[in-house]
Image 1 (cartoon, one colour):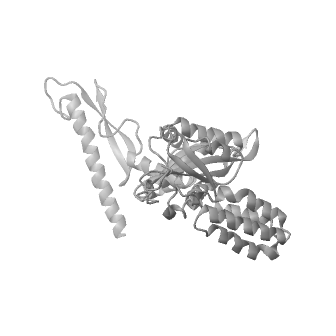
Image 2 (tube, rainbow, N blue to C red):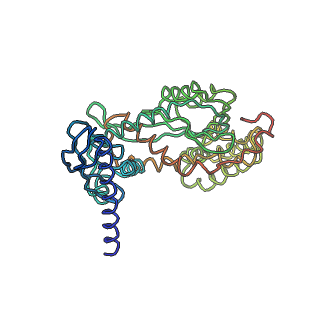
Image 3 (spheres, rainbow, N blue to C red):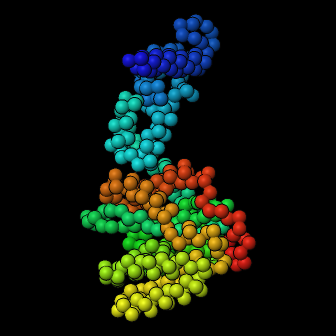
Length: 383
């Protein structure tokens, strides 16, 4: 009850203050106060009309002056505005943070006494989408010694059917060790053509200084990565590679195979890792696991790129995994699950971009992800 009384007192005080401001503006426009008789008067008062304004203090009842002989315009309250800008910004922040449109509507009614119409929400989103599109296509002016790539899958409608689609995301680690979302684009089924367009767009926007590109092995990824200047190389995710090999291993041999694969990636350099992989592949064939041995020989080279001498030893734990972008994708999926099926690919792309900007601007801007101080000490370093 005490809090409710304080809220009511604050709302009444704000209401009186705001109502006094338009009256003062009306006096200035009319060149005379209300009921004042004087020469040089430019307009006459014609009463007030009521309107409401949703503000932080609550729902306010305002009296807007009307003038006869002049058009009244207030610098305090914009014409036709029904919500304070901070209220609209708060509602949009809720939407971009992962609250459904129904949740935004319910919260707005609970806090400010009125809902945001769906058309108003749509108009606000269009403005945000324009800003997001400019951000997504911005020039890349920094060097990114490490790039992590992954895709976010979602449901979308197409031709009356619901199908799986994807949004490709690339996170670059700059020369100061901070992370940045450098590319977000529609990937559909993440085929070779989609991957190639994705990487080509980064090159055209000025991407440079790229070393290892970390991601899962999929169509088009390896060939397009090798075309990125100046010396980009593909680094396959270690855990996914191990799972791929173990999928070809019978349950009775998996404990041994898992320990053997871990021994390969525990080596100090790439030469010893390749030698150990050859030994493990031979032992695997002796156990009559030819398919697993072939998977090991075929993928161990691209999974041990992080062991090349041009990459510092203290960086090795980061490029061999994709955990960082995986956590980001989980945050994005939490938002896309609220929507369910998107009506088109553009709406999905914009919401994913908005979610990425929301997450990265709060938790990534002031935190250094990698220590880049010794990267230049290595001859032939990625940057």
